[in-house]
Length: 260
Image (cartoon, rainbow, N blue to C red; front, top):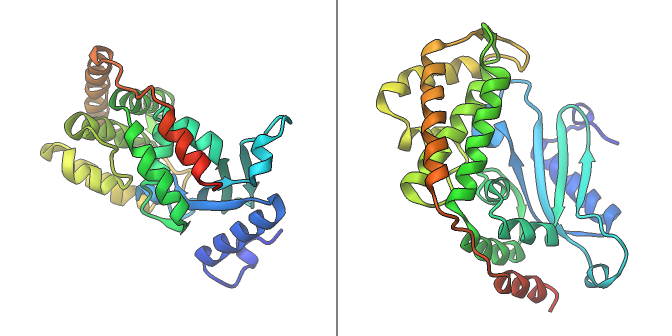
């Protein structure tokens, strides 16, 4: 299997080459492929890997068969490039759940490949966005990363953005009732408090120069801010009503129409 260090072209060209290889090997059609993770969020380290995520569909007969069905493809290349994808059926089921990660894939600023079929799916999926479900996901992500990575004396600065970004995503949803943008800088420009922008912008520039494993002294002022935000959003989300869409008909319709 070809590694990026042995490839003479750009990372984008290698990704497209690997996507074509996946289609031919797995007998699937890729509908949409994007960059996920820190490179899509806008705070990658110099040695961050590339996290490529894609949506694919198989031939109609596959879905009609009685055999157990695998609904994902893992295609890890090397320490630089990580590719995996979700089957169409899994994707539509997770739109019904208002899966926040799926909405991030749909809104990624780095699109390697897309199709008209994906546009149909995405248009339908937008109708299933749930504010409470998404905010609960982002709150849980922020809380977990904070307690696991940011309470020691020395911490990885990258982890601050794994906490700040979901907190700001909660604020975006609370304010605008729609999926938050993927880029951290866009989130921060719109919903981060003015008195916090200086320290966060400085941290962002520092972090971009640090390798993945490098640590710095914990920033107590930022930790206090995070703890206050976590407490606020726990109470806010607990008080929200369930706003998920129960209907399956629209998703079933788009699924069937893709085979007509």
